[in-house]
Length: 288
Image (spheres, rainbow, N blue to C red):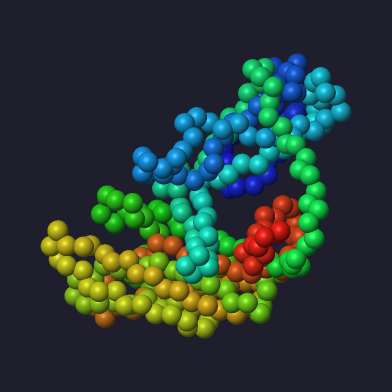
């Protein structure tokens, strides 16, 4: 089963039986799903990693414990191919793009052993110490479509800043908290042998950051293009963020590239349609 994003997934029993008639007589207690922790494996051999697929806890919802009926279903949580980590240094979440796949995978089987199930957690009896009304949210855009020198791990958007020197990227956050700033980080690159070039970053028409990119050498042993990062803060009044990148080049041999755009924001803790993952850093404390 291909997993494009981290989240809760549902498997309908009728679909399973259509794909494999053996599910019609399978014992629901023997259904198992295996996967991994999402993201890429660590490159360093010394870092810990599981040496096999990990069994996921699942919930089988049905009226007959001895078989799957057509209206029964299976619920499980699975992680996608990309990962996020919190940085204490700048108090932001930063993503890691999976360089090898746009999907992670889970594997379903039955009849081998008793499957791992979701078990209830005991209620917390400690007194609460904070009332959480908003949470940290984040998203990113990293197309990873072209490699400039056909080697290495740096990939960029195929939409070049050449004939077109300005491009817009729209991000939406429901129930955005207007009193707290949105953080936008854009990583850009450029190749120009005659002079330095620059990028400007604007959000909703307001210019917030600029960066200069030095000229590249003309020899094949020289650096082909230089990455530079821009960070901007913006207090949004609505749910839509229009991020604009503008490339300035004094000569026509300059070409700009967008590597990634990352956005950190605060949203009010209001349930929107469908499932909603949420977390908060301000609520991290003993007893919370």
